[in-house]
Amino acid sequence: MITITANVGDTERLMSSVGVGMWTWDGRNDQLILDPVSKSFYELGWDDKAPEELP
Amino acid sequence: MQPDDLAGYMEAVSECKKTGKFSCEFRVVKSNGGHRYLSGRGHTVNDHQGALTIRGVFIDVTTTKELESNLVATKSRMQQLVDGIPGLFSYIDRDYTVMFMSAEYRGIFDRTNEELIGIHIGELLGEEMFNERKPRYDEALAGGVVQSESSRSMPDGSTVHLAVMHKPHYVNGEVEGVITLGIDITERRRIEENLEAKSEELVRSNKDLEQFAYVASHDLKAPLRAVEVIIEWLHDDLEDYEEGDVKENLILLSQRTGRLARLLDDLLAYSRAGRKVGDVKHIHLDEFVRDIGVLIGPPEGMQIVTSEGWPCLTTHHVALETVLRNLISNAIKHHPNPTNGCITVSCDDQDEKVTISVADDGTGIPVYLE
Image (cartoon, rainbow over all chains, first blue to last red; front, top):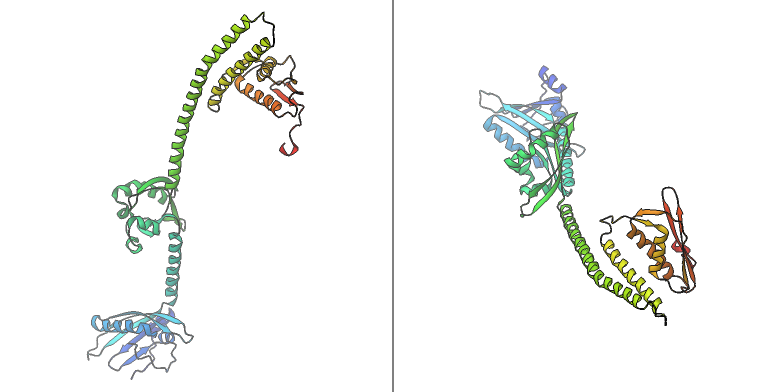
């Protein structure tokens, strides 16, 4: 089961300000964590699931 | 994700598991059916419990990809345009590295575009030719336009002559490279060589003609002079002979032989026309014109009227005589009634020139021919 959780910190704010999206693949929990910029690339809403093929 | 990119993406994931680094570019299908190009970069992080954790970034590289695509299309169009040029076209940068080359130019080296782009021009030309051309490249890199002609051996063994121009390529005011354009002038060179050969042949032919005319006039003059002498003897011997028209006929015969002698001289002058100015002689113009009239021998009833008191001239008498004889002869020849006509030769002496006019009382020149 892949879930999406919010991860907004100072680094993410800086990266998002220059259009860079950040992500983390948590293999232990099968979680792909996308920041808002990355989600916008996939045109995903806040509660949408990430596509399973993503790392 | 665009389905076509999935295989490459999964391969990048597998690679990440081995190397610890994730790198992949892929397309995302947007809701409007278009594509967004993403560049993903990441790396594994330590996980003491053995699970795979990757952290990374996505960057939207759609604009870059579109620019790259446009650049490729532009380069392709430019390559096709340049390949259509009937000549050799190349571009090298400041390090003499080949950045661009037309198909015809590539044909000389028998290499593909991929094999040529990015290599030093010296590798293609060879050390000797490169050293010969380097000063021209350097002059163009210094901002000058260099034009030259050269010859080159082609793969099929033929030799091609080229008119070559090296021109600097400026970017923001700085010379970034050299554009070289070579136009095949082999055909032009061949025509020039043929023209030169024909010109030499013409000179030789003219010499032969002059020699022939000289020999012919010389060889014919000797027997003609003998005839003139015989006529003089007959004239002396028949001085007291009054019967018939013998005396008049002898005079006519003398005039005709004199005319023939002149024609032989003219033949020689004609052979030299356009190449030699000819002799200059001091003449009394009125006597000169009258002599021409006598030599022409107009038919009975056709008068050639001149006047006296014309100036003396120092001129090319052969050419002048030829012109006047032709004008008077034509006036007689084309007169509607040659046995009852009049040709008037007049002279207008001005300060710096003399105008000689030949007029006849014939039908004149039709208006449409004037």
